[in-house]
Length: 232
Image (cartoon, rainbow, N blue to C red; front, side):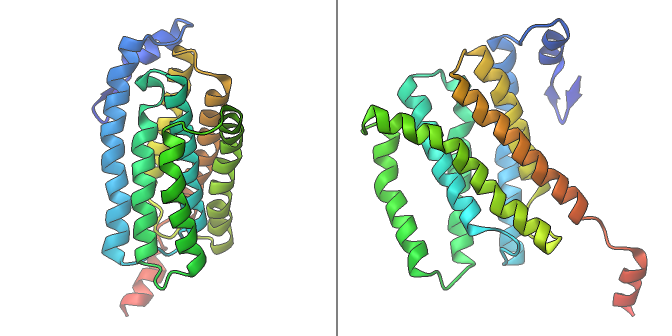
């Protein structure tokens, strides 16, 4: 079974037989999904650049995503997990940083509080990624990152609901984020990752599914009658 050039037959066959796919089955699937994720991220960036607008996007939501991905990636590196269990986190972190930078650019003038948050992140992120903090604090940070990811999505979900619009959000990007969370569930189980890693993936599935449903609901094509009125 192939969808968009991705062969799911190996993974689906294993699941149909009642067991999780082997690593050799999952790794090619992950590499394909990451490739599509790169394209998906570029669609969001291009959409913002073409329209010159970040309408409907929550700055706080994307900032919190950067913090959450940083903590999650640092924890996986610190625990020495295999790359297949967290590889997409590195890409998602880079994607989130680029999107935040673009949002800052199109949200001029940026307030002092925003610059302080950015500088604090730049100062602390290298230390966290290097694991050069107290182990107890590290565990506390990782325990909080699930709440961070949830809080990162809530402002955007609420903004979409309040505006009855998803602004410049890209369906493809959110779909690939949803797919990445699905794959991360299987890889976490396959690699016997800590339950906290699995919980983060499940939260990602739920929040990204909510955003996808909002995009489908709020980005319906306008009725033909309205289009005809605008052309008159």
